[in-house]
Length: 150
Image 1 (cartoon, rainbow, N blue to C red):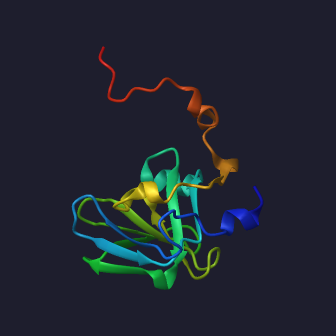
Image 2 (image 1 turned 90 degrees about the horizontal axis):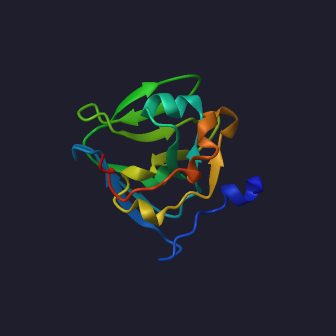
Image 3 (image 1 turned 45 degrees about the vertical axis):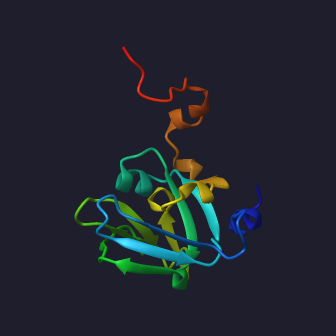
């Protein structure tokens, strides 16, 4: 996939103008996004893995002006360089990522915190140079609709 394809707007079957909302697990923080996403991806970088405790994180990026906090006030953590992660200080849910040096004018929303995350399917895996080795073949594992019985 070419970088220009990755940075192009993620598709939304409903319209060219997207309006979505989301928030943290406990409901203390709610946000709203308007406009089209810039991209949607699965990030494998060490920083995302450390912040989430997961092997990758799904992100949907929007122009900064498109994201509005409508309830609560996220806490923030400044990591390496200009990376700032915003999260709920009550339940710990990661919500937003900003890095003005790397992605000026962009705010990444953790896709799974959107009320309808299925509307924003990832279009690429990014930072795969830092991917955990066993994630490369993860799709070959057996699947169970619920936790399997012993």
